[in-house]
Length: 92
Image 1 (spheres, rainbow, N blue to C red):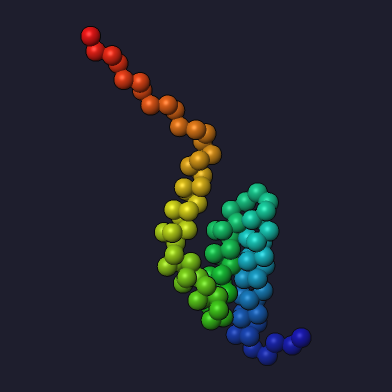
Image 2 (tube, helix red, strand yellow; image 1 turned 180 degrees about the horizontal axis):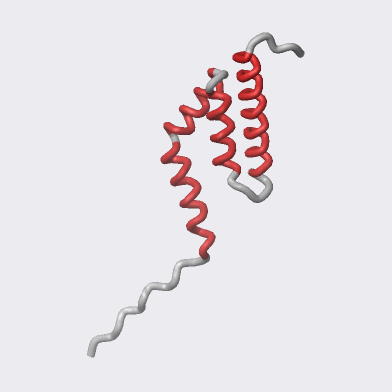
């Protein structure tokens, strides 16, 4: 493979790095690590070169609040059951 210009070489390495970071993030979804953050970083690198990555990144940004609420509401149940409410005192 022969790259004619510095710009082509730069583009090649950005694309390569983007796919490596994206695949690492996908692997982190099933292994320990910040998978979603790494996927977003990979998409940010790829968005400089590909329209599909820009659209997907924009969609994630647009629906970020819903994604955040879904993640935190799912994690809220992991703390265990809520303590029972205080029983009312009998007044004499």
